[in-house]
Amino acid sequence: MVNNLFDLTGRVAIITGGAGLLGRKHAEAIAEAGGIPVIADLKPSSAEETARSIREKYPVDSRGLAVDITRRDSIEALLQGVLAHYQRVDILINNAANNPKVEDKKPGQEEWSRFENFPIEAWQADLMVGLTGAFLCSQVIGSVMAAGHGGVILNIASDLAVIAPDQRIYRKPGLPEEAQPVKPVTYSVVKSGLIGLTRYLATYWASQNVRVNALSPGGVYNGQPDEFVQKLTALIPMGRMAHVDEYKGAVLFLVSDASSYMTGGNLIIEGGRTVW
Image (spheres, rainbow, N blue to C red):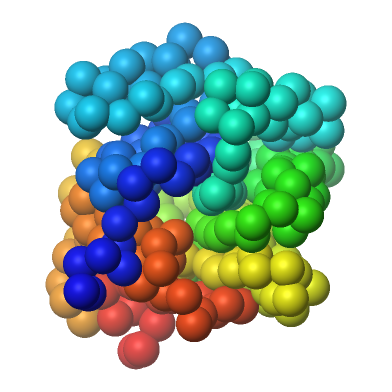
């Protein structure tokens, strides 16, 4: 039956950045299909709080574990903890990423987000979490899958891995050009790099029964200012941002047997923005 293709009963999924806005929804999608989400997050209290909320809603043994995905030893400790408790790992969702906000600018500071001023420290930090972290997690956890019964890696990219940011939606009236905020360069670079990593690993581990795909979501509404929302939705054929629950079906498809003949792909779900 088709429904059986989406069944994740007993499968263990590690979700990095699992306590974040979308990380929680990825975990819910796993749990609703009978899978066991492991909430891996830099903040142990947030990880366990998220896992507790999953356990309260679904009959699954979700756990929250602390991890620093920029450190290989921390990822190895996470993996050993998962294997000791569950004796298996079937799914890795590389979801963790930095996403610096425009309001991070300090008074009197140059507009830091602009390419000319973008700090090398921010470049290194964003790439370390979003791209190197996904590399390390895939290397440590994916290698165990490849050496065993196989598994699935899902990299969370973005519609901005497919198109460039439209910097007009970030503009502030009355500011000179050099003071206008922009979407930082690292976001596009990290998300584009994740798609490259997806293709590489999909072919590298194809014979070991490890499937690797990417999901490129569009913007999710989360109380952003009305002016920003209006500018962004004008670029989207469906005329709105995504609801926070709208990627759960895509995540379930990509980590389940429903996508058993799909690897190296990038599923773009952005209300049609990249079509225009």
